[in-house]
Amino acid sequence: MKLKITWLTLFLMVATQSYGQYGDGRYTFVFLNTNPDRAELPKEQVDSLQAGHLANINRLVKEKKMIAAGPFYTGGGIFLFDTNMADTEAVLSSDPAISAGRFELEVYPFDLMEGELCTLWHKDEADVEMTTYYFVRFEPNKDNENIDGVKTNRFTENLLKELKGKYKDKAELVGAINLNTNEGQIIIYKSDQEGGIEELFANHELVKKGLMTYYHRQIYFPKGIFCED
Image 1 (cartoon, rainbow, N blue to C red):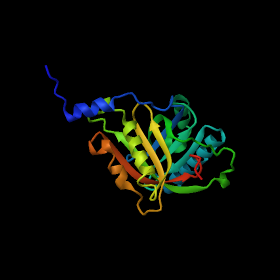
Image 2: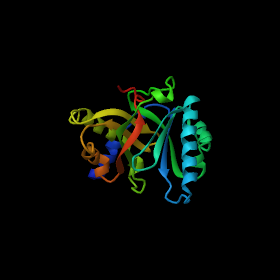
Image 3: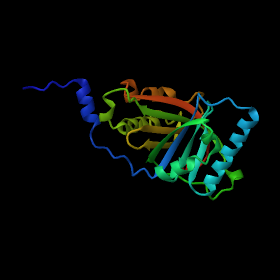
Image 4: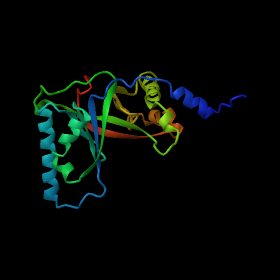
């Protein structure tokens, strides 16, 4: 009996080959998504929660638990921790803004796809330079029944090659992260081109096949975390 192989079967056969996941997820990545159902509070209370939020970030950095934090220009932000999932989750409630329900959290173990992380723990807060980067998140489409069979990092690796090749005059890779257990990838890059190079990320092979979604934002983030100049 002949086996009929469709394009989707062939695609999944290639996609499910064994590809390394970079490590054991020693770091933890936290998305702080603005909670659309957060309570309406007086301005002074919001300001107080924000002040406590920033003070808690500084404390966790000084305790050498948090590597970095940064806000998106559209609201919300991210944390990078040098702790495992359990230790990270244990300290998140110490943030008054989180405890007050201002954010909806996503917490994932992660490893670097390329390069390394450099902590800035040796620097005084005033000496840490903040800058604007472009931030891209690729996320598996959990509603698609075929996604469980796809090692998504492989396809993002192909896109990184294009970023460092065809697009090298338009953008520079800063950092690339793999969220473990196939939860997607993150690319951070800098570009002098107005609006960045979003067209590259829209052409991600799995995005075009409906197996992943992505968003492209700007983030205000400490310079040097990915050992960049």
